[in-house]
Amino acid sequence: MTTRAHNSKPKIGYTTRNYAWDPLQWLIDIAIRLAGGVPVRIYPKKPRHDTNLSGLIIAGGTDVDPSLFDLTPKENYVYDPDRDALEIEWLRRADALNMPVLGICRGAQILNVMRGGSLHLDIEKSHEGAKYPSHLLANIFFRKDITIHDDSLLARLLGGVHARVNSMHKQAIDRTGRGLSICAQESNGVVQAVEDPDHSFMLGVQFHPEAMIYKAKYRNIFSGLISAARDFQSALK
Image (cartoon, rainbow, N blue to C red; front, side, top):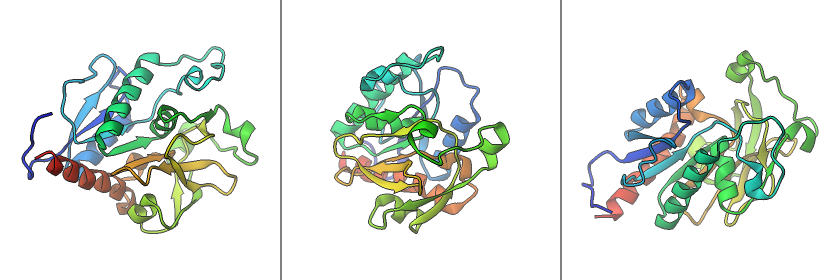
């Protein structure tokens, strides 16, 4: 891996579907730029395995294939095995290098699966009271309360132990993977964030902070990633 100048902007890879029509991925691109990083889009048709990155974001999207954690895939659901494989490969690389990682929604889930954890395939069946509106306006405006562990990275980034977050998911983390700790939940028990306290920056959030970057506290998640990426970059000198 090549040496980077200490004062250069860190390159942050972010994973997406193959197609480009996705407003949330555009918002991730904007959030990376606002935080002082250089966004690098990664997708199955352009995996960029030869690109030197200083940070990694695994974005939202299609459900993770349940066969990766020994459950039966849902009938008539179209999974994305190429993206699953791409993201697991990049996550393993980041894990080995201690590269900063942020997983968003699906990203938090596949981070957990990469570490050997499992997922609930339907939170409405696995958690009492976990029924939320799911139409387009609800995806944009609906909010729910979460409680954050006070000694966690997420609490430091958000500046407190309570937050109101959006809801765009049907699955959630079940058994946590190796080294990951639950650091935020809803009152009904749905996991809203996990992190690895022994990693430089490894955080998975079930909500979509990129859709709330109009608030400084959610921009802080990306700023924290960029700060950790600068440290990672500097350590390579």
